[in-house]
Image (spheres, rainbow over the protein chains, first blue to last red):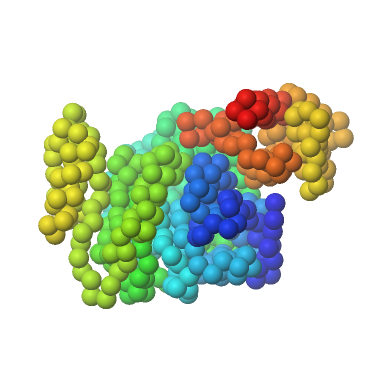
Amino acid sequence: MPKALVNGVRLHYLQVGDATARENLVMVHGLASNLAFWYFQYAPEFSKRFRVTLLDLRGHGGSDVTPSGYKPADLSLDVSGLLDHLGIAEAHFIAHSFGGLVALHHARRHPGAVRSLVLADSHVPGLLGVRTTPGTWARGQVIRPVLQRYGIDLDTDNPHFGFRLLGVMAKLRLSEQPVPEELMGLFGPVMVKFGRHTAAQWLKLLSTTTAEADFLDGGSLEDDELRKFDFPIFAIYGDSSHARRTGDELCKVWPQAEFQLMRGAGHFFPVSRTEELIGLCNSFWESIENEPRNVRRPNDTRAYFQSDRFYMIDDGWYCSLREGGRLGPFGSREEAATQLAAVLAAM
Amino acid sequence: MSNLKKDTPIDTVTAVAVDLTQDWGLDPGTKFASETLVAGDLGFTSIDIIQLCVALDQSYETRFGFQDLLMKDGSYIGDVSLGQFADFIASRLDAKGASA
């Protein structure tokens, strides 16, 4: 598969779909992952709409490992360089987890080159609210005693819990011991993404380069910089994810954006809720084509979007508004959609 | 990689797998047979499997949709043999022929 020499690093990438497609989509994976995260399930679907470009971030997959250069801002320069190399002047982006930070840094540097962004469960440590009031992770109350039972010393309220967990899971994968069912039940999606080779590659990356310090650095993206973004944004968070706190804060920073909570989902919903995410993304991109209102305007403080969308409790259908209200129960999803549309139109 | 398409899918899959692994320093006794598992026996990672799929698509100048072979209920299945790749290609070629 092709590699491009960018910033002195050979980046492994893959393009799927019609080279003459009108628009481009760039897919950015998270930490300890690679382009396979998106390749089999997402790229075929999204290539019906876009020419899709997937890449392995520096130090991941088939891209070079370098002694340093793993801060999100550094990695965003790799992305920019690759797009220059491929002659892609502007693109839609979808990014999961840490990949979202990379995409945000790319957008900060080249805001005009981003057609839209789907941000999937990205923790943005520079946000004021995240820094000053990190809060308690409710799901952590469930996870902590399980970790303790297996002698795993991780603070679930630590802002870097997810990162630390990757290291623990990688070591578990490489150990000769079977992973206890109870841990698999909690962290199955993390374990699934770790083949033995990927786990070993991850641990080696952390132990032989500046990657760990660079990843934890998180960059300096702050609220005011994020507010400048004027392209359509769709931010999706798992309602039991450790990154959910970031989603709450971004709601305040981006009143023009679409937000969605994935009900009952954790951090790895792109793995566990594939079809749902594909549908949401397609709806978002269609809305951009049909409703340019999603582009932020100066002093636009409207809050016309909602989260949680439609869900079922017992036999009733409900929908939630970002402002916290819940509508329902309705007899069908269609009825809920009609009612929600009426409420939004009146806003 | 040049086009390695052979007369039968299993021969093509084998040729592509041999080509991909030629610089890996595999044990000289490594067998490339129908029952050979790409991860378990040849040490393929997820990226290598994608590379195999892309090379097979290119050899037949089509997109087979290998996700239907490799994914089940949103997760990668444990491992796949060269023979399973070949059978999958044969079934897709048959379906294509039937619909032509």
